[in-house]
Length: 117
Ligand code: 5GP
Ligand code: ZN
Image 1 (cartoon, rainbow, N blue to C red):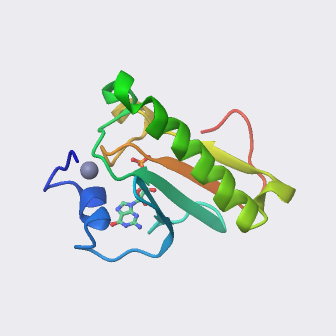
Image 2: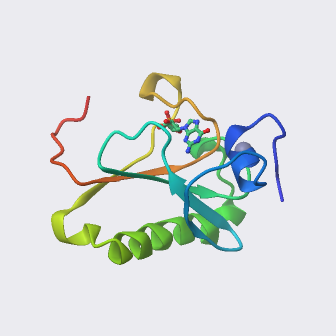
């Protein structure tokens, strides 16, 4: 599986640095964000190192669908679907991406405004 030794999320996948893991399966891992922006702030991450949306390959089709199904499972398990939640991908520096390993932000537990900041 594609892996970048300098990538912080690859290190979390490899259990080289700790994280509060809320879900793990063969292809994905989900853990609490270190700097939460809402009462619930979970990052859903493919174990494969994919830097950003533009690095997604045709062969990742199933994996990307799986990420959304993991988000659904976590949201249901934690009851987030009742009050609503926001899912965000910051793609590229201009959009605020700071970790270049693809991830879904799952945010819940407060009201969210639109348009986002
Ligand atoms: P981005 O800015 O790329 O959309 O999101 C990166 C997220 O990763 C940020 O919300 C940041 O707080 C989180 N983050 C960065 N380093 C770590 C870490 O070592 N552990 C955890 N759990 N979250 C991290
Ligand atoms: Zn990585």
